[in-house]
Amino acid sequence: MIAEDTVFSLLYDKFMFWSDIVGILTFGVLLYAVYRYRDGVEPDTTEKDHIEVGSFPVDRHNTRLEIAFYVVPTILVVWLTILATSSSSIVWVIPPQDEAFDVEVVGKQWFWEFDYVEELTWEDDPRITHVNVEWFSSSLTIDTLGSAAVNATVNQDGVLTDYAIDSASDSTSIVLAHNSSIYQSVKVTDADGHLLHTWEHLPVGHQFSSAADEHLVVPCDEDIVLTLFSRPHDESNPAYAGVQHAFWLPQWGAKEDLVPGLEGGTVMTFEPDRIGTFDIRCAEYCGLSHAKMVGYIDIVARDGADCDKDVGIKLLDESDGSSGGEH
Image 1: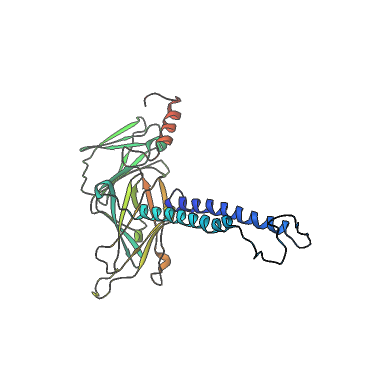
Image 2: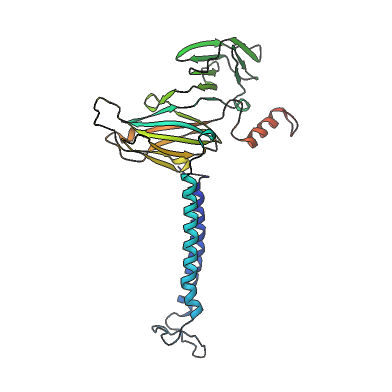
């Protein structure tokens, strides 16, 4: 998977640009010299700096050209070093805690655990799903907006309850208290059971596990800070600290080691720029079941927000057939 729109991708493009320039100039001069001074071509002895095939011009030299041979490559190397150093600085700068979304990631044998140290409430884009969920303090409102929704399954800390959606109305209200301290979700489906829309609240202390096919969920267009720990699945042996893992997000070119026994863990930061589901991989051999150290990360929009304003405006314009105005 290509790590698009990342500092690594941009750095790669810049290196390739300058490599292309150097390659074109170098091979251009080389091919010219091969053609101009090929065997069988008699040298023009009237030229001041003529070159004879098989002989080295030891009796003369071009000072400016010789200096350029050293100065130009040195400038290029220094410039590429500055680019690489500045890119590394961007990657390793940790944003302030109050400006980032923090999650703790624990690598075990052989699965990932995701522990939330701050809450997250998110919802699918109503402009795409044609369903909108509003959960107030004492009531739950589901606007179907002309969709094929017929059922809503509400999960309150593991307790599932189904509610029928009024097909004759574009809005269904349910008397149900919202509790921000527990896990809550609303999944809206059609008559065939196909999932149309998801609303979800993740409280502080909630945990997902890749062993249960659960995904890491983080908001888009925000700095994400992951604190990474390697811990044993079975803690009965106090002398065993776990194994080395490496948490890798190929889509963003971000990777960091999980070091066993490191009390404070290691830190990785990235900024997701598009919604969707992407891969998580372990880039460090961690045992016989290393291949099982896979997972997924869902990039979502916070409740009431969107991840792409340009796309959002376009969808709104198409929905009412207008090209502007208030929505």
